[in-house]
Amino acid sequence: MPIAVDIDVMLAKRKMSVGELAERVGITPANLAVLKNGRAKAVRFSTLAALCEVLECQPGDLLRWEADEATDRTMS
Image (cartoon, rainbow, N blue to C red):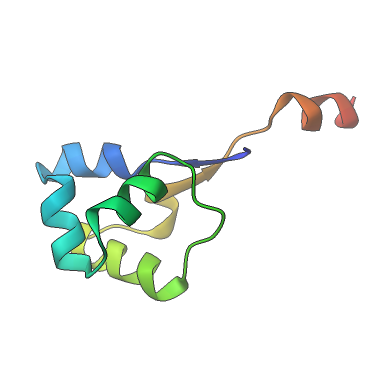
């Protein structure tokens, strides 16, 4: 998927566990793991805003676009 999720990077920078982040954001650790591991199909803006508030970061610190091979081939 061309959208990469860097929640684990921010967790390490903030020295915070997945469980603590999930509790402070108000989502289950299982749902946070789905998002963190890049398996989520969507994320609500309210969840993204809560993540940014708790982690004291911007959405771009958590999400980034990466070209995949199919995109690279169509651009050539």
